View (cartoon, rainbow, N blue to C red):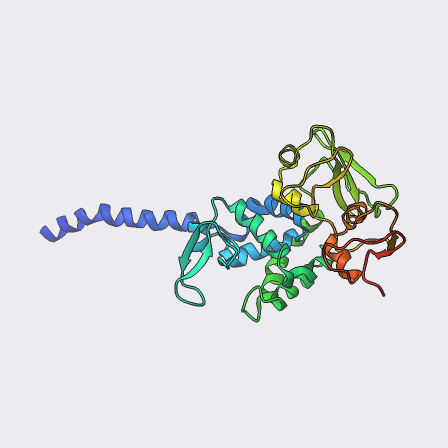
Length: 313
């Protein structure tokens, strides 16, 4: 009888423990859950940084175990990005390749997505990826592996498998600005394509498949950043401007990254033009222009010089 009563007393505890394990299993994210929850964030990052949404989602799934890893839950870090010497934000320590390694910690998952894009965009070893087609997820996956994003020799195959299993490649053809209809044909240089009017105060145009607006009187970086849901730092970076830059009415301001090359072959410099002017006129990164023309960064061309807008054949 005593043994029976002891069993009854233990029953609530056993039920409670069982309940906890049941709840834990219920909250685990699946691949479909992850895709549904974060696809819009991945598409938004693609719009700004030109990283394919399929790659962002696929890497997030692998690196965070569909959002279930300790790093993802405790630090909102979905891409396994370690601190590195340039990280000044919060950190999270855990064992990885080595004991007690330092990982970046974010306030939100969205910050992790944005930092992942910036991590790829701002490091030289990944720059070749942005010359690939945004829809070529297989080349991107192989390129990430070759550039050393992960030490796993099967990383590219795993990434491709996840992308194809969940059909993540479908998102590489979408945009997170549904009111903007991107022109089907490449825009001409002399007559930039007007792609749509936004719900804000600026008309969005496109040069070289990169969207921009014309600065108006009274505009500030902060106002435009709020209108297009980007940061001031992103606007500076997209336009090759430093933090002390001042907006001038009538000038071009890109709201997404410029391209690494142009549809046009070359440009002949006229009086008063700078490399930054040419970069903005053709929607080509100024770093690429210096590289194609074997010029030192910061130097300016002379009137009559031919500036190549893509790699010479």
